[in-house]
Image (tube, rainbow, N blue to C red; front, side, top):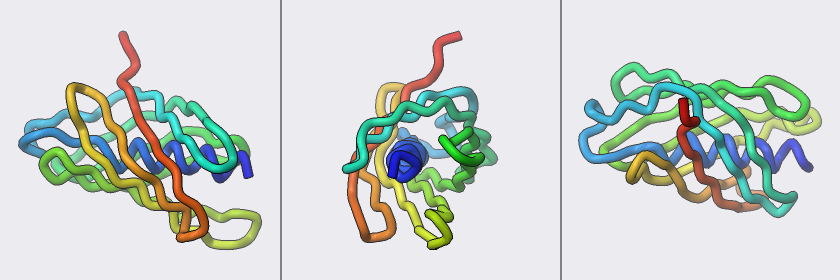
Length: 124
């Protein structure tokens, strides 16, 4: 279940990264994704790659690599992750917004649980 919580954090980060003008919002780089789920709170270092409004998030979960895809639409962000949860496929969806250099929103764990997420850029 801790893995589910970690997945929630990652998904949340991917779903809420947007600001005015999707093409003008640069989300590429290193972030810390924080997920709050019924299983607990988790912080995960992740890297985001961006090609226009298409996003890819990569990190390392508790048990396996984590890869999410996302879409930025203005200040709205949407992340999705196909999670193998103990042999059961689970579609994790993170939705949120990008504001003042951070992201936050709500997470849906395949309709089985809900949570929240936020992400902040790693200071260089």
